[in-house]
Amino acid sequence: MVKIYSTPECPWCHKVKNYLKSKNVEYQDFNVEEDDAARDELYKLTNDLIVPVTTIDGSTYVTSFDKAKLDEMIGIN
Amino acid sequence: MSIYDFKVKTIKGQEKDLSDYKGKVVIIVNTASKCGFTPQYEELQALYLKYKDQGLEILGFPSNQFAEQEPGTNEEVQQFCKVNFGVTFPLFEKGDVRGDHAQPLFNYLTAQAPFKGFDESHPVAKGLLNALNTKFPEFLKGDSIKWNFTKFLINKDGAVVTRYEPTTVPSAMAADIEKLL
Image (cartoon, rainbow over all chains, first blue to last red; front, side, top):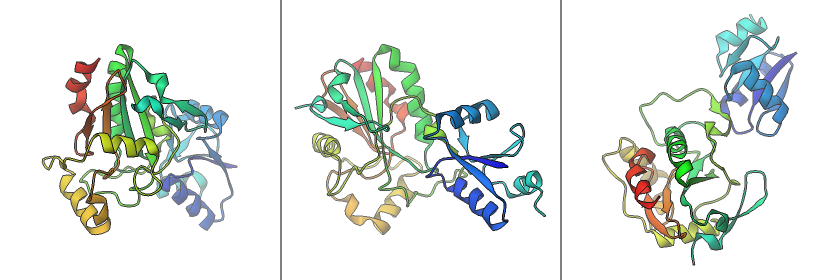
């Protein structure tokens, strides 16, 4: 499952989510402003607290709305 | 009357009495909750880390009132957002800082410290004035808050000492802070 760490008012987070929707990719969204456990996970994964971060395996991840990298990680052609 | 007569709400919705900051030098700043023109967060955080042990507090009040119209800067817009903007000083509940629904604290601050114009040597001053003249000419009238990152320096007795417009970078406030500590 694709996981996205995001905040509600971050425009780049919306772009990532809209992009995945447009490609029919299902994802779970974690609002790190409210979900402390998700925030800790995000920090553990990236050693930082910036969003959006997208990951599948919890070890490699894509920061920001980087279409090429998202395509590569998720396998969108 | 002083800032100690005001109560505000934390970002988690709890009531906070500003009299809790008695005896501290305080900076009150309206911040932007969107991503983009936010380099002042980093300088505010730097001031906080440098002076907090000597008694400085910084209180950030996010507002969306200016967020849709970012003044043009030459800096590349970051394609990500920092959670809580990467700052460790307290942020309060989002609310209006100008207009009919302005938080009473900001009405008080702007009445105590009138608007004296922008520092036109600052790189964003021109873009900021253009944006205001075009989109919000009424914002330029009176002493109300003009844009994100208007800063008020408060002394240890809760009185407003100086108002700094968005065109003053936080690092330029250091000497004034030291005088009050």
